[in-house]
Length: 301
Image 1 (cartoon, rainbow, N blue to C red):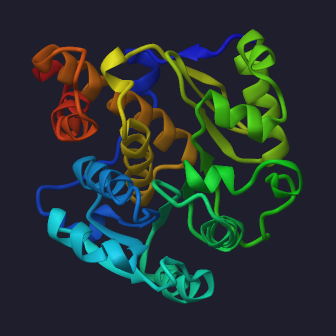
Image 2 (image 1 turned 180 degrees about the horizontal axis):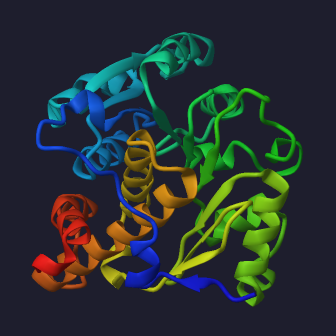
């Protein structure tokens, strides 16, 4: 069965969160972002800013202590949690002690943007993804923590874990699914459906035509976007946008669909205003409120 293309009619059947004029930040969701590293501190910042820009009420960011102050200054609206380090590397046990108490205060989480490629960060990611009771977006470094071989996701979630949205690009998908690039290219939808059936998780398979697949619903295809989205940090922004919608109460499939769509439209808008080449991920993020407004009120524009 071919994927369902995301048209205006399809999107109209998947409503966005709705708020009254007096809605406070506490009514619009609380997100936790776990990620970042000394080498890539900005990835967690991009995810967090995207969540705010897509309407999430409050965002907490847990990043290594060495970069916590810089993240806090770069985005003063955030609550920043410093993850302890030892000898310049994340202290996984200490980091879990900081992260786990936040589950009760938050509605959703994003884990992985900018995480270091080392065992301590991978251990933290595996523990968060396997045990956190919140709906979660699993991105970047957290995806790699589950592959290959014995680290694959199948059967790894605790019964109390919340629903998961995986956001791999093609290379990461091949690692997660145990296939090669030719097999994936030949049947992207088939590989996506097999993955979600086995893992019981929602999948956002990124690409020129991004696929959104879930265990109990249709597979969607997004055809909007621009090559401007092929820029550093774009995936971090997408993860944050989906996480921000999860925190606002959307189910994983709907959050993934709208996160992908709004991110793509923001990329189109940035390309139209700036040009397709040289667009920065933060410039895409900062156009999310405008495309969100137009998505909510299409007859006004």
